[in-house]
Image 1 (cartoon, one colour):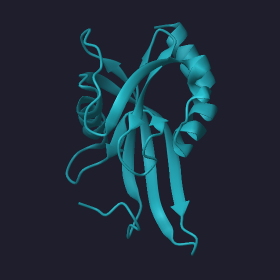
Image 2 (image 1 turned 60 degrees about the vertical axis):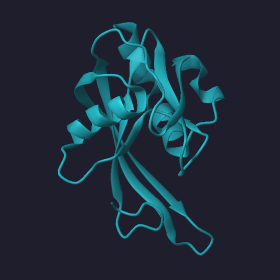
Image 3 (image 1 turned 90 degrees about the horizontal axis):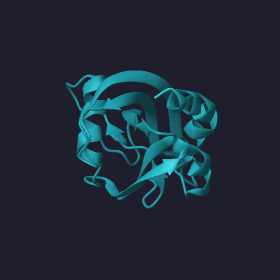
Length: 150
């Protein structure tokens, strides 16, 4: 497993965008980085898996939902430096919009302490991870348009 804290190279991660009726599924993080903050489900791509498979796996691991049809949505760079200007964390996060299969309700698992369907117009009131806040600000209008036609 690649070390996440003070890595030797950037880590590729995925974010899973799940929209339903003008809401987005957010999870409260269990672990560092950004423990206790809210973001979309996601995690690191594992050696030997495609990025689309990582999206489907992370959705299942963190939300217990089966998803399909991963569609590229955005790419976010997340860099965090310590006081000596060394890279503490560096992630390249590839965000995908997915379709939920079936009618199951999400359940928090793996790295998520809690999951919540949040209306898009209320997301910014949450204590968001820095990378998700950037993603959300950049993509709120696009997500609202997608939600309006679902």
